[in-house]
Image (cartoon, rainbow, N blue to C red):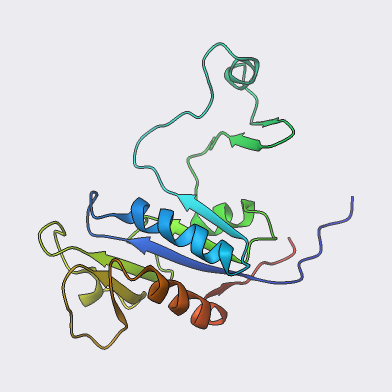
Length: 181
């Protein structure tokens, strides 16, 4: 079987915060349709800190996965999902990015604040536990509910168009280099 030819690299940018409840999901939820309106194919990677299951107990796909299948692919005319069991608990962001369809122009990652990849930090004055940008050189911009005077770009948390423009203008700097292995 011939390997899929990679003709481009996806821009990968994370949305992180020092703790939950700062608005990561809400910001991504607002960025995705705006980026799509600008003509980009957008994918999202969501990191979960707890066990989760997207399958429904009792359904055939659930039963097949519980029987020991390493991967289960479920699809219909409008959607598909691949469920992969991480047998050795060896997960890396790079491996997860490679699972995303190569057609994605922009991949937004929610969470993984300690990983070394370009991130936009959400800093909320009365909610955030700490200012990640002070100790993380991978923070490329800040979205905040207060005015911050920093050397990196700072956006009002509600300036969705400004954040979208920043991502588009800088996407070439944050491309994930797919290899053909």
